[in-house]
Image (cartoon, rainbow, N blue to C red; front, side):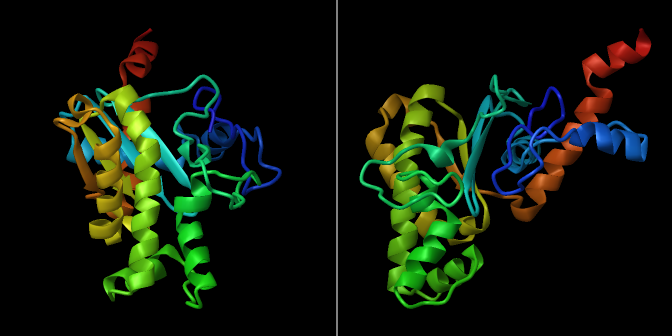
Length: 241
């Protein structure tokens, strides 16, 4: 999403929606102020505002069919120049030959560590999961193949996040998405690799945790964003003037 224009910047999974003015359509149809953003930003904002309001910098990573991230600094989302911030799912991982189902390129993090990738790898071994929650169920049952695949996916994510942590030095790293329910394996894999590959100073006080709000994080972030649009200083100043 292009936050400034309220348009969809690009949508691989929704052909024909590129540049569609979602915010203007909602504002016109409902005759109310509207805000639009991507899921990772809303999830991260909800988690920060409700769970970590005092944190200086929160890095949120959502593991779903793909992988996305958001960064919240002093309560405000960090915005990129071209609405491509947080798109870490397409960071390239050496040695990964799988084709990314989203962009069609080889070697993307999402091709190795997304929920879709874990489902794919388990199906190749003869299991029949269809969703990430099915993968989580197998992990909870102690299935060794599922445990191995989920842990390896966490390590792959930790490899990429070690660079992000070294660059940003966040207070909190939150792992969201359905796979967070298998956090003792997935988040453990993230933590092990990240701590090995980051300088101790960057991780000395870093909190690495699964989402607290779970499925409520997105709507919590959306509510906070709407409140900011209506009651933020820019909106108040515009109303007064």
